Every structure is written in structure tokens, then in C-alpha cells.
Image (cartoon, rainbow, N blue to C red; front, side):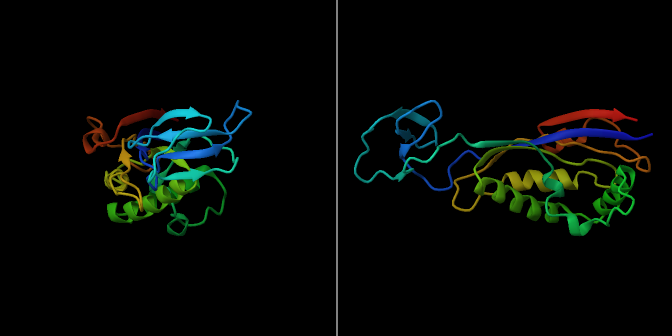
Amino acid sequence: MYRSFAGDVSISIMKPRARIDGVRNARLRGRREAADIRIDSDGLITAIGTKLKFKPGEKTVDAAGGLTLPGFVDPHVHLDLAYSLDLVKPNKSGTLIEAIRHWSAAKKTMSAASVLERAVRAIDAEAGFGTTHIRTHVDVGSTAGLRLVEGVLAAARVPQPKAQRMRGDADAPAQGHPDEPEIVGREPEIDAGADGDGDRVDG
């Protein structure tokens, strides 16, 4: 029998990478003319209008008519697997069962520190392309224990380059394998700090 447990970690990148007070000459969806955007010290938009007044010394970015969008949301990613291709054997059969078996073996070698390093790289890459919120699944099982959750939660607490801070919430998916006994008892990923416990799938 195949058993899978799912939980999640949500990561909100709350602050802009560089502190600014506004954006000028931005093209916004649904508006024909360029607009200015005022941003407060918490990174929240407080005003949108044409030719807003900015005080001397306030930092603004000239969008030069470029389309300005809200931050992107990545609703499903596996930060514990980020940059891990070289850690997992090739799937020669191309089947899901073989892939799960190789991943199960690779989990045994992963430490919280190695997950932390790879997850931070992935978060920085996402933020660099405009992502402001990430919901990640994290594997929890007998071969991984809670090491992968601990690594991802630690990554959510690491300040980003040039950013004030990244706040982490967490959902930790635990995924099992026919050869793996499951973790029994109260959801240990919740105790470890995960935001949620995902669905269990038997098959």
C-alpha cells in the first residue's frame, strides 16, 4: 500500500528588496494613462493617481510606462527538493514508483543544513523574479524524519539579500512509500512549526 501525508510551509516575502517610496509613470491594468503609486514604510500601496507629489529625498522608480503588476504567488513548490537533481539517481524506467524509491533513498542523506542552503537559493531566485508569496510542500516520513521541515522552516527565517525580512508560515507535506513505515501519532510536522498538515492518500 502506498501512503502519502501532505503538509505545507507558506512563505511571505513581505518587504521590497530595496526600500522605495513610490513608482512613477506606471502602466496599470484597466487604466489608459500612466499612474503614480505611493508606497508606505511597510511596503503597502497607499495611493494611486496621476502626478502624485513626492517629497524631496523620497526614493521613487520611474517605470517609464512599463506594466506594473502585483507580486506573483507560487502556490505549489517543493523547496526541500530544490536544486536536488544531482542527489537523486536517474529514473531509468520512467515510472513514478522508481522515482519515489530513489527519492526515498536520497532523503536518508539529506540534513537540515543542506535543505536550508538549497531552499534559501530557491527563495532568493523566486523573489528575484517578483514572487512575494510561496506555498511549499515539505516531505515528512520515516526516512526524512523532520529534517526537511526543519531546513525549510530555517530558510523561511533567513533575511534575504537587501530585504528587510522574509516571514515564513508552513505546510509540510509528508509523502510515503510502500517500503517506508509511516510516522504515527500527533502530526509531528505541526509540532515542529509547520503551518498545516496536508491530505493523506492511500493507494
